[in-house]
Length: 438
Ligand SMILES: [Zn+2]
Image (cartoon, rainbow, N blue to C red):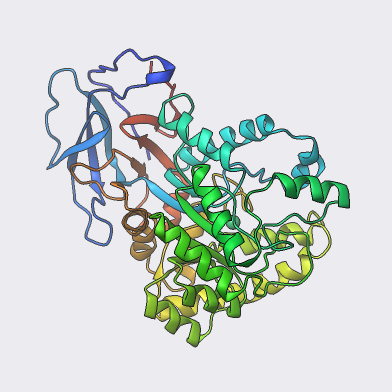
């Protein structure tokens, strides 16, 4: 496919890095447009973008007004920017390098890694990500720098650091006694008992968390034995959920083992991450509360490959084998049972920028391409309560384009040729664009 990217009349305003402004008006001539995922795509259309927002969508190729920038996507399939509900934007996805270097890294080093990950993610067509755990301040600084036009990346919605019980998946493990005490003393996410866990939630919110994540069960990537079973008590989970909701934050639970998933659903979580062991009873609990499942199907595959290559220490291989063996069937059961499915990858475990590989796995598990795309756009947008996920007047101008037809072959989304975020073109004809725009 060729995007000609013909700039008939370019009128980009002069901008400083601290106030990068999109061109005032852009006309996008699109061959096909999935303006409202879940419905039939439009044919030849013109998307008019003003001041970073979608102003209008017209049939046919409208003649641009004077001074407008024109983007030629006449041969492309255009759709809303993709949304990933589960990334770790500051995590080095090279596990081996990360293990060797992490004890020598300061927060500044981590921020540089996060900056590179953010750019790769945006250029893969993901214009919004929910960050489900890292150092809270790294993520909020990154979020603000991107929103202020200082650096390039997707819109970031941070969860701060994952709430965990002492010794749990988000606790301190794998370090010697001195380091364990030192690291734990700095952490605000580790809690025991309902009161302690309420405090931990409030601490994340005070550091800028817009959503709360907690570890209901063990996890593959923590260097601690004890498997993937329930780690947090019912009372602790209830306290986390109620406290977060009282602050207007949604709550999502990292959960592999069935007992932990079920307990989190009973505690009232809004969503479950991973969901490696789901049976029919669990499906009923999902339906009763209308909670969503974020499958992160690329993650167990990536984690198992890393563990088998010997890159993951100690107890991780057994847990990776266990999760990977059960995960696909559990997700398929949830899809068959009409559980609400959102799109999320756990990128940081799998490589940043490969987020779209999740689509093929969702389709393999039983979703249609149309459903998988809807999950990654309008459904995720609704869950986040943000004006994104559709190409409709008033929405953020987060728009991407691919060469093939993703409704026929969802892997077309693995090669994104055009990326616009909030009206600024970051990729055109498959090539990175200067930022701030020249
Ligand atoms: Zn994760």
